[in-house]
Image 1 (tube, rainbow, N blue to C red):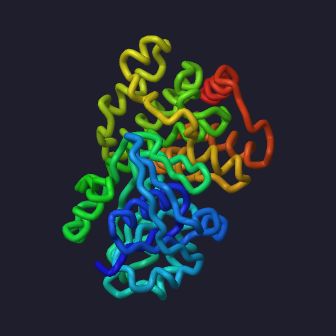
Image 2 (cartoon, rainbow, N blue to C red):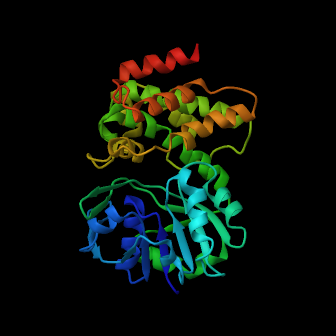
Image 3 (cartoon, one colour):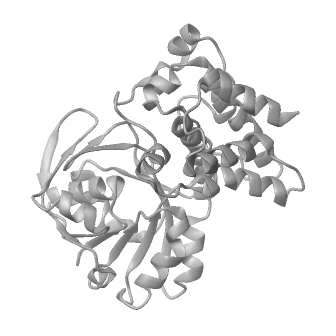
Length: 332
């Protein structure tokens, strides 16, 4: 194993790369100078069970640092894929394997198109990470799901040793659709201005998510494949369960609320930091699927509009009641 590069090392990338480094894997992180400075004295990685390890992997800001690594985990925002591919194209070793660990439906396909001389695999990270200084905490349960490939034979043990079990899937398009359904909450969480657990504990916000998911499921049914089942409840049952009263929701799907109390969505983090969000690649992906099928997705389209308004500083926070009214009005 020559080494692993995490390209676009934000909170998720630092957590994954840091845990691999703590397990003895040669790791190079490539990311913003601001994150390099935060982690300059090393980092602490806390698992969902509270156990903690420390690591001090190499952190660079120059994409050329990916040279010599035979596994490159891309964790940049979905809108930065073309830029990432341009940066990596001339520095990757000929046999380097690239893995897209990104939100949205097309991260792997986009990188595959832009890096035709390399093996590019789709993947997704099934958990959230909260950063507090140089401490990175896994905030929710979940595994790393990746496109099945023989390359993982050489890495399975290392990822498992790092506390990052890999689940190989032969149905990544269905997995990506299921993850997209879960990520539709990112926009709602960002607009709420609340931690995830507090937002999801409120029925009005869950009803917003239910509307967005049910609309997405209708759109997905017209274009296949059906989304995979990634949680205890099927995607369709989860979308219906979200709308039930709070007490019943806690009884039926209380595990959904098993979240670090400080955790927010990555979209909320981006809004708070004044960065462009991934809303066009999440809720916007539903809108595009609908357009491709000759129909519309007004609920998700309205969420896209509201997040872009928030990016411009227009009413960045909504109550559940007001946001639900907006989404219901969009359906008329």
